[in-house]
Image (cartoon, rainbow, N blue to C red; front, top):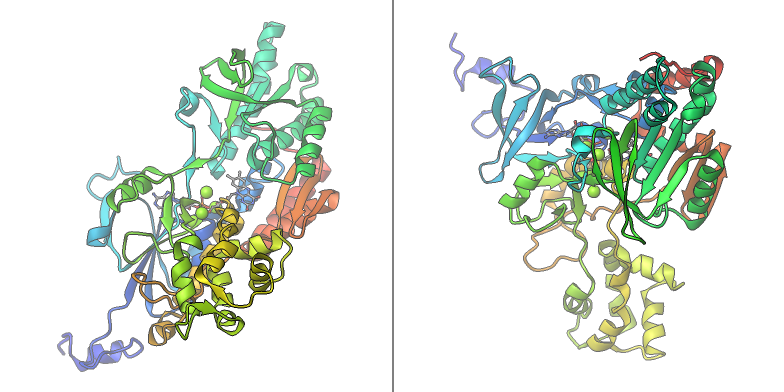
Length: 546
Ligand code: FAD
Ligand code: MG
Ligand code: MG
Ligand code: MG
Ligand code: MG
């Protein structure tokens, strides 16, 4: 029996695959996904299209629930409890997984170059190439040091599960070292000086967790050295949590003051050595150095080297972050999508497209728009340009018709000049989406839905406003839905800022915070583990072994 490409046996064996007219199995399109974090995992979780051959490449074989990462640093939650192995999902969905890092994207040959983790010991097999038809980049970002000298060498980052464990060991190590005999008071003070750099949500939450640990546990376990501990939080701007409502910033700053956390705003770190951290005060320009025991660096994120290199290749070298269009397709490159922290959406300006919008609305080519013409495009405009809705909301207008009326009075015939004038301020409301798990997971889900409907949409292309040179968009563009922001502040208190200007600070928000994040992506296994960690902490206190 010959098992050739056209043998009956082969046909039989491939009976479930779709065959082309010659009885050959159709080669499925190969989708390669880079990354198993918030955006990548969410994409894989919602992807249900049997016509793709899906391959995941990521250096870590688990998904990490980052919102609880700061709680790992002091042992409130175990690292094991907030990771979800991806192998289970892969098996269920029939996807392939390779544990490796992508080190180069070769978009012109539709290839990626990868390196597996322990490359040094496996000579020859450690590096390999992989082809793709469609590439989904979800590699996240790396901590940004702004090239501050000494940070890579001496500071801790808080990004991966490993980082949180390292921080935890180091904090306890500091207490053990400070408890050694024969130390001077000065030396103990230095070792127990914890410095947090960056007053964003992560830096603030870590400071709060560290403070809780000092108050709840250290006082009992290391009573002799407790008086020497100090936490300093350094922020270059005027306020911490500046992306939040002013009420939350004020509450957090006051709480930290009461807690005895030394909050220094307007001070920028200019260098870190093995023993000292130097800051420049913005007002006086003076540089001061202080001894420290441990520094945690949390000042924001930057692009990974593999992405920087890719941006050079596709003509995005001048940009700060990889840009996609509103359909999450990387600009300047075919069949490559990017989502999550690794990319930003290059939102179009209304003013850039104003002539096209006008002529699209002006069906009879009369040079003026009446109310009826206009109704046809309003929905498309709001879809494609989210700033329009934000602008209307800010100015308390119900719809674009009202906007035109407020600009042009009762005049119902609108020509292009009047149209331009009415919409001239709208672009001022353009905003980049924040680098959060909320955005990343929604983008993953959105892209999966597009992929799930790909065939249907290829047959019947339609969608909002299309402009010349853009091809045919078959899908609604990605739209972000904000469910609220949360800032855990320690002492079981969390500040919540919910849509509609709703601010809540207190104990109940703590639970709200967790349930919001845990509701979709995390398994029952993980939820059980976290709840049992919380219970254990509540009953027995935190684990202080390292
Ligand atoms: P990630 O989740 O970082 O995933 C990137 C993935 O790519 C990882 O699996 C990584 O291993 C893999 N990878 C890296 N390099 C490569 C490579 N070269 N090739 C292949 N794979 C690669 N957001 C919120 O909304 N709420 C919060 O409460 C919150 N708390 C946070 C707390 C902390 C401590 C941190 C660090 C972040 C927090 N965030 C929070 C932000 C949120 O975690 C990120 O916005 C989110 O993880 C971005 O998702 P992503 O998929 O882009 O990247
Ligand atoms: Mg990801
Ligand atoms: Mg993640
Ligand atoms: Mg990230
Ligand atoms: Mg992004």
